[in-house]
Length: 473
Image: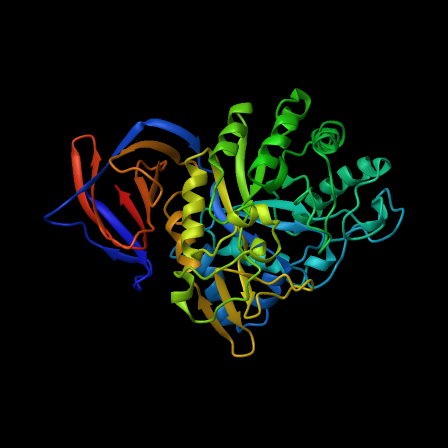
């Protein structure tokens, strides 16, 4: 069996190509691929175009700005294929804004995406110019303009019923405005985090029933009436019990289902669990609808600069370390950032998720800019004053999947000789016939894997504390 092996390790390998073993001594684990067992189709992997990311990129020299975009979208880089952006402002904006700022403008005569023309739109267009295969864009609103809401504020509140038609029209106006800039929007989530964020930054609350009403009576019909074909994703918040509660309402309503592409999810409920049961539950309710992970990041942390070891160490904390309810603290321990990315992607893929989108692509050394002081870590951190770029090991973690597991790939089956979740794996078959296997070894011991496909065999050394991607031509 001819294989190409790429690995990143806590010991310092960064997307390093290594060879299969010529001979084997000692204990061996076995992974047998079952390509005739096929599951979901891969939509893609990627990150988000935020105003913060685009703004810090514009503070760099042209050479470094191009270097970052090449790293994400060039053929030799991550080859991102699925992305997200915010419709109106979010916490990773320079301030709060709406494309329809004029109160009472129900005809949206004053609609304008002018706020995006300095930063976000140029970043997207430059990425498009570098991407050979192209990429899909999911747009998500954090809030409607305050004048459409029950509390007339950027934070919290809900959409007034009388503005449901206007807000639905807002989506098509956005598609038109971006199309005029040469950018196609592939899909929407109805609302980012409809359960709210404790009013810390832009938000707008829905109940599952309210979201269902908006989709089936307003957004879906508006897109259909005007001849648009953007995908609609419901929910767009954390996996776990809440996902199941929302899926039970939205995915059992045939009038909602006929308008939607699927369900969007985030990862912030826990740093240690990908919630396979809730993903399985969601899939079983609507096997014909996709599940897409639309946001995840190392949150509530200021980035560690030029310190690869930290990203491989169990030192990161998330929002829940400080603020979760006492009974939920167990879900928010210290964790290894690289492990969290790879573990979540693999766990999601093995439970029917079709696409996985990171949050900000680029942030500054503070983890912003973010006017709410909601500092987070991105795979690439930049020092704008010194014009320096730091590719964290989180970037490597994304490349292990995004570069090699391509859109339209099929997840395929496998059988492993080991049990437990310390070593986890997933596998796909690309459209070109190549098969790709990803491993995450979270243990302190290296392992030897006997990789089998039909009557072909390769022996692979899987280092301790490592991500490994194996490409079988």
